[in-house]
Length: 289
Image 1 (cartoon, rainbow, N blue to C red):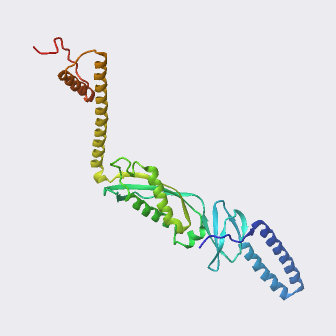
Image 2: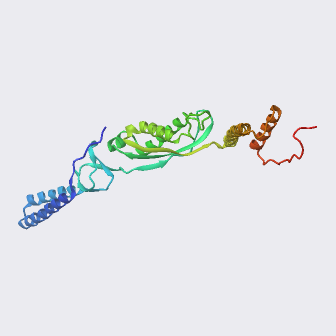
Image 3: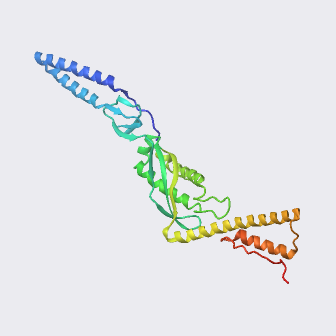
């Protein structure tokens, strides 16, 4: 079922026409009562009933609001024209908001791709684009949006690891833009039949579950220490190599292999150590006895 435009007339014009008809009916009724014309009085009473029914057709449509119109249980269209309008008074109407809405899912506890329990939540921004599908295709479209969004979030969370262990691997923590796009697509596919368009979906909360948070923090710290040490060693080796090359090129000192190895060892200790080195002044010869 697709949305279609409902027939309506300007409310101001219909109000003036109905008031004019009521005034004319009152005048005719007064004259008929004076002339004691029974049939004319009955017609005037019937006209009053019709005119009162016409007034029931007047309504106000606010900006970004729709009126889903049914006639004796049959969908006849949706009124989106804002302002003072008039509809068939025998129709029933359901007001539906067409504004952009958003909500945050509950914090869900799921297992990621590696089987680690994590907590995850998302913010979903959505809007009704087809009022007929939203009202008639699902029982309660607002609840449908929330339940399907949480279901899509669970499915997406189990498709990726919390953190990547190899370079280039997608993860929930490191690839926020990609996972947000995937989440939006999954929710959009689930809500297509409800006449809802997902404008944006993004992760608002992501953390390891409490029972493994401590262990995972230690692992992250260990990985950071190893990465830092790797960088320090690479830099130290480059510095030592540069120092030895320059000493040889400028002929500052001539080192035999043994002293060269000792110098390399001392420089690496100085450059890679966690504490500042304590200098030792040698007042004698470099060679023993």
